[in-house]
Length: 306
Length: 306
Image (cartoon, rainbow over all chains, first blue to last red; front, side):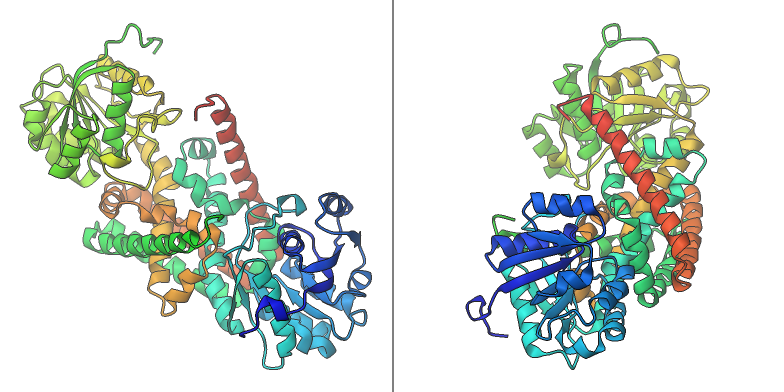
């Protein structure tokens, strides 16, 4: 892993399947870094793809996955997890033998299973990946070249992953300013269930349950500033999140049940007015959260552009 | 309620008990609006009070509640809910007969009970209040004059509240740029449990449970941007929140149990890969949250300074 960008070749033809926030931002970042000659976009929405060409994010587009990947030496798949399988099936037989395929899916076991089922003969050239970055906005309009700068990208290579394919994908993300980390698949899915999928469930669940209350007008009317931040992630794309829940259902459901039990215990402590126990929980949480923010800020200082 | 600021007298001597974010910001706002002649601060921490004088937030200070309120025509109590009772007991007998007392507590039934027990003879001059504003920071350093501008302040007067006292407190908050709303006590406590207390429990509970996991270093290391916003309120003051939980325990514990059941149901839908049900929940939540934000933004447009 001591390669530098200098001895790693850039990309000749990049195929981006799904030109939204994630795919569009990778295209922009690689373009800006001078790491790619030509970018072909592929998706279902004509308007979004036309806009992507206008914005210079991609050079051309097609709605046909096989056509999009045919000349690509690198393929990036950034579609909702539920659409991965269909995309992989559509590229089977059309991929160049040397093409490297990677993805941006938020759960990794399901994507690997999908790829193995659809393109078994290409499996060693598939590098499962997950950039830990995003906003609650969608579409190519929301994409920007610095989305991945100083962000972490987790790669979950398998025992049979081609080291050259892994090195190419690593170099790609580094060129976007990201820090690349390798992790076991199961661990990735567990960590992401905890830090991202569970919080999304809490935010979606909270806003939905408030919206269903009789006095929901008052409820939202009197929500304070903290509520705005707390619920921001409830504005995320419902289809994407349906797919993440289903793809990572095992890790996520277990974590949600554990959290529900903790909330029930906490409710009990509150009913008992057990101030000592409540204070211990809140203090531990505040300490952990303040330390997390200090860590983020220390990281941000390294790059004044951030 | 058709009084204007013009025919409402300002405050001669304001006593602020608890000169932190909430108390300090009221003092600053009234001072800036030219609505007060003299401000006496009262609290336990000498350093914070000295800083408050240096910053011009208060004119003088004492650690003695009785001394602080003795000459005050208006008393604002902004201490954690668990300290209210002691403060009210300390002011008994020292209050001017015409003094109006109000507070900024986040739960109202408990404060009213505390005041009734401590100062029964002054009850008609007590106007329970709750400004829906705040940040996760504490102390007078964190206070600022515009904290309440375009924010809502809920007052929960009782049947025997003196209309003049209510009018004075209403005028006070309006002078700070706030919108004043009257609400029944039980409804206030229910609405706040839903929009503020429950979200804080979810954020504290989430961060605490992640911090207690074996792989907590990784957990926080790979937390994305959404996590930062979602957990911001977990950096709030633990003592303040312990007191809020206990003061509003009935409304809050019920809501937490209901939420825990909903999370368990949602976990079940996820395990069953019930995509249709998940999508319905996430879409309803996104719609409600987007509408809430649109409402906020429409409100903000009314005041370009916001």
